[in-house]
Length: 62
Image 1: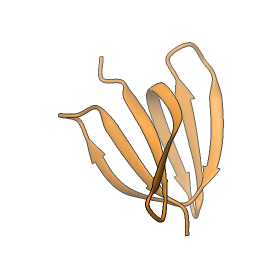
Image 2: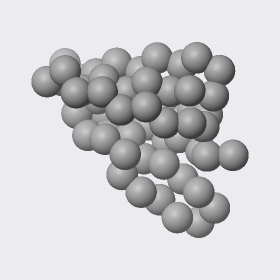
Image 3: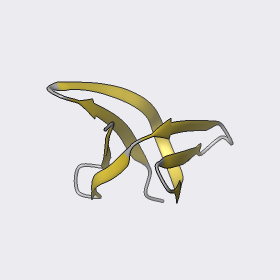
């Protein structure tokens, strides 16, 4: 199974939002993140990149 870590980028700062993400749902600028154990996180921004090679999704906060 592919799991991603989600990183929020604000300017030059990168911060971890959530690890072991298996599902991402985008609704406008609301992004719902769902973890392997059922945990949920919601953030605002847009997805800049999803890289399965590094296992990372980059979200940028406007």
